[in-house]
View (cartoon, rainbow, N blue to C red):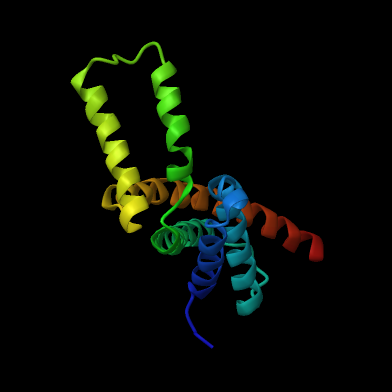
Length: 173
């Protein structure tokens, strides 16, 4: 067995990363899945260590941050691999609807060069995914998005996990 303090964050981050690639679960990944993974990591650590004392807030936040980062790493990697194999993802599927939505927005300057450039970037990204299965722009934007949201919700999950597990520890006594 691996003897590391943050091994539970690796395991729960891996599990959350795998689940973030499941289509209907993916939409709940930041606000439900990542905090639940942190709560599980804290619970597993408490069970492995056998400590009965309340969880330190610094440890809870560190577990949240680490689980969020591991979820980002594994989730982004699996999403890129699945996109590479299938040459399709949510962006490719939603692309016609995105164009329709952008065309219906009255406040966007349709004749502006920046608007046309943004549409070209979207079209190039979609074409790269369909033709080669990979788009550096899509991968980079997904990584940045995941690096922001998953650790933030991981920190919130750390606080939530501390509250839940400390309260559960008080009722055991």
